[in-house]
Length: 227
Image (tube, rainbow, N blue to C red; front, side):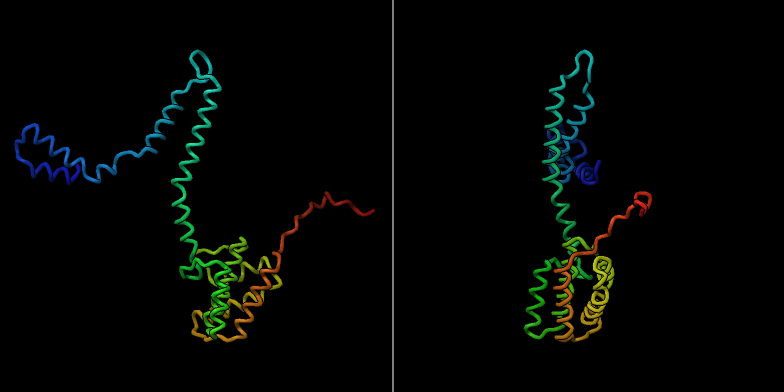
């Protein structure tokens, strides 16, 4: 018995008649917490499917025809897919919100939006914002290309190190751009046009470049010896 139901019983007359007892019980069970505890239609459907599978008999006298089993399996698969689409999407949305973290800030802007905002900041000589947003654009672009992983807690230099594995020729510029980002973001540097242009040029270079792909190694026994 729940505390609420206990309180309701204690508040009731010591010897209620049958009608009064029934009304007290119905009033208590009609409250929200009891309604929420009831199984949903999806719970009932799942239980029915489990019971149906448990009652199947394959082969022998009284077994279900194979055609009925196939049709039933197809219907169950469609029901599961529909349930995943309906109930799975909220989880995906929550996960995308978590992954919107960018260098310790909630920032869901795309690489294109970050480049646009950086250019707008540069046009008004706000070099601090311009450099920070342009480096964020680099990180977001590499993440969109699945070349780096942006997770909560990922730092600017961690992105530079990940990107350097894909673009080894740009390793030095990636580290320099990370230094510029840390300077304007954490060290209160004002930044300047030269720093912004350096980060912008690196971003443009990475967009035009293809990542380094590891060449498959060929076992030595498969290499034909020179004649």
